[in-house]
Length: 427
Image (cartoon, rainbow, N blue to C red; front, top):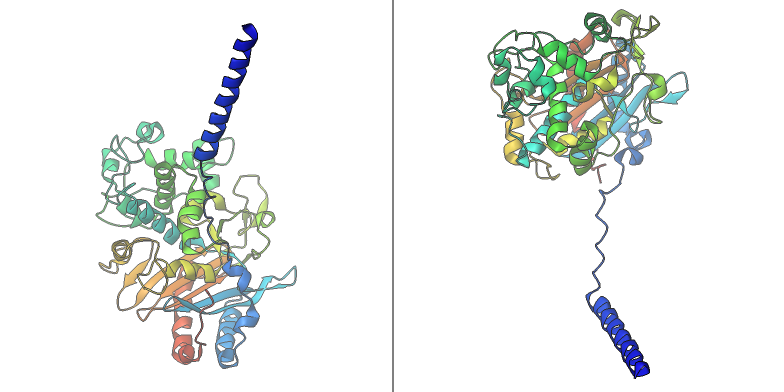
């Protein structure tokens, strides 16, 4: 009897196992496909000076070289885009003279305040997702940055009137823009180490505003540091990660990075930077070590600038980003037509556009950038042509250098715009 029971139990167990196996086979979950990665066709890997050695454009090359000689520039990189097609990308002079490396269009350079355009696009992407609105307030219990760090230090209730749009347009009203004054801030706050972003927040926000938000404007790197913080708070990602994954990769830009402060920090294809004597070549190191350094290497804490001025990239990839936010049909935009219109809406010459310096319909869109060792200009003309130049040498003209680069662009367009080949190096 016991043997019969045991046999029945074994049979039942085998039967149950068979049924279970059949269930697993029939209902085995279909493996989920790996998420599609962004295509890794690195634009910079496809570019070289040889692709833009065009006999009809030798005169253009000579104009650029003359401009560089006039301003004692070691190297420059130029990209020309028309109707979202990259026609020309070329490097001039030295990427690193000491290492004997010529400038190539694949080299990346600090773009300084052109970074603000990237940050503004990040804000627009978040707005498209309904994660924020540029009309949202920044501070206060209903603000985006309602953390104790901000609430505890702000005493002037007018801060609660500041919106994201005010920051984008440099209309926040902050009394000071101290991001290039790390040594002074360290001493003023009695710190034992170089100030971090939280220290800058505490320093600036404890003071009263200089003017009511939105009633005037004053260029503010600090405002774009706050925008970087907003992006982190709303997206839940570190600023650089969000921008790369949610802005740059979808735009086809895979070789843009937050830069470092020293030569030893540079990436393999990053240039060496040079400071003109007239720009005040040497300065005390930003960390208050007492060591004198070349201004472009240790004079400022570059990563701290974040979305205000820390990005590095090539003019060709910047052109690719512009093609993704210009409203033209040839390259799919990463933001909606409404967002493009918001970014480029023009009011008057005193009002900053969103991320752009200026978007006068008669003159085109412009975005400038200046750091020690860098000058940059992005100029998008009304006819759909975009010229971008970044140099690895700063001049004594500082931010006003962009005027001379703009004049160079206009001269070259008049003389050579019909000589560019009909092609698209984005493809």
